[in-house]
Length: 212
Image 1 (cartoon, helix red, strand yellow):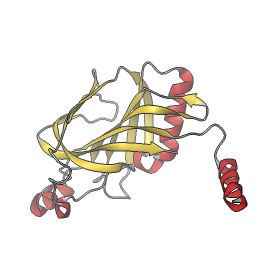
Image 2: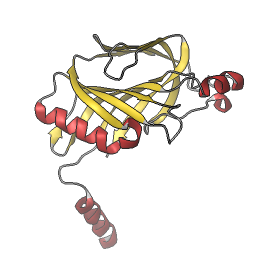
Image 3: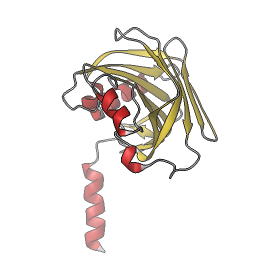
Image 4: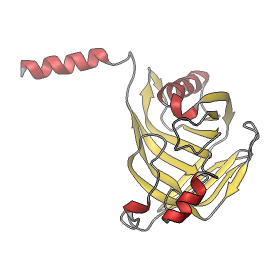
């Protein structure tokens, strides 16, 4: 009993001051099919998949003493190679919910920049934006006026996908990640020198995230 209590106390001491767990919903849409036949995957690997939209909706949680519950953030990422390549040179823009206070915005940017530095690469800028997020049944919508739109549909069941045809993994850790169909994936902002619009392809991952 004493050993268990001591271990718990030591664990608490090792946590960063004010750091707590964040939980929420995650959506990722790439510019390539993450679920496809082998020939389709091979053909796209060297020509596509260099861009992605990463979205987090924080349902609950605090980070370093700042309450982030109810806020959302979106990152647009581009690279000089398929994002599955660790050596791909990446740059990104982080879009933070305009409702966030200065302290909340700084906490979100600091968290993402530190936790996902390798994924985001060179963060070119941070922009406050209006973010609209909705999830109904198996349909997910993320709309950032003037910046990006995502319409994603989950599969009817979690076992509809053949595992050997899922060629990628989410760019960030996701609990029980599911492949989903991106009915529409649009990036309109020109901060990164590139825009895209894709639709009706199995290019998305959805799930829940937990950051400690």
